[in-house]
Length: 237
Ligand SMILES: [Zn+2]
Image (cartoon, rainbow, N blue to C red; front, side, top):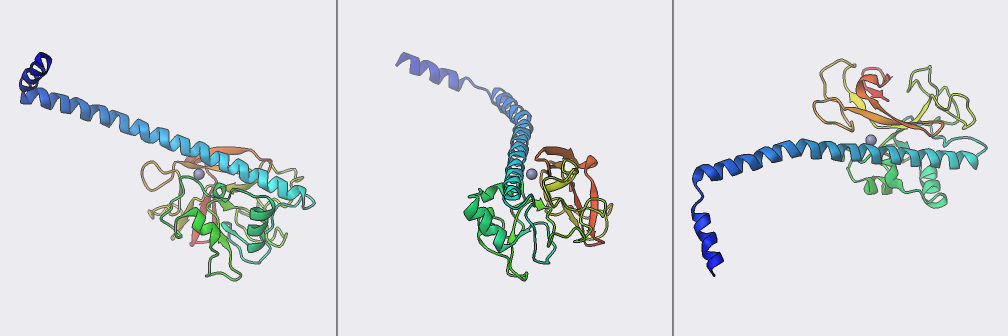
């Protein structure tokens, strides 16, 4: 009883200035903590993203081991790095029981293309013939086992067809989807589709998986920039 009354007295004793000081200190602490929390969250996402790509690398090796060393082949005459054919879709689901969520960066902008990875994995796009499934990463596949497919990574880097290729450590298989749509590079247009933003229109960088299975983080300034279809979109890895 006495204790309670004592507390009451103390509470009544707070002045407005004291309250404002306390509120000010709390606000300051929050403002100091928030960026640190944001950074921790982003670095956790980068680590999860790298782990995803390593799983994709293992999947590609498993596939190659059962297909005379050949990596998955797009094989349908439709050139897009982020689409999976129904054949591959079924093989990954049923034969390898692959966790399809590993095809989507945790930092992927889910506002685009319908968003939800589970939905995208389950529903083929209906605007392509034949219908294909959208994947979050850029998956760099040959098409019909031909390296004359397109100049996606520039003619200097044809896609890896076999896991025995000596250039496996230099050629990317999959990477964070970082595109620029619209006018050529150096324009002021916002970078679309990109992942791993912190501030401004450009991403901080992205993860890339290479043919030998290693994954690296590349800051945006060090990413290789290629024009896929001139003045339509450009990619970075
Ligand atoms: Zn990522």
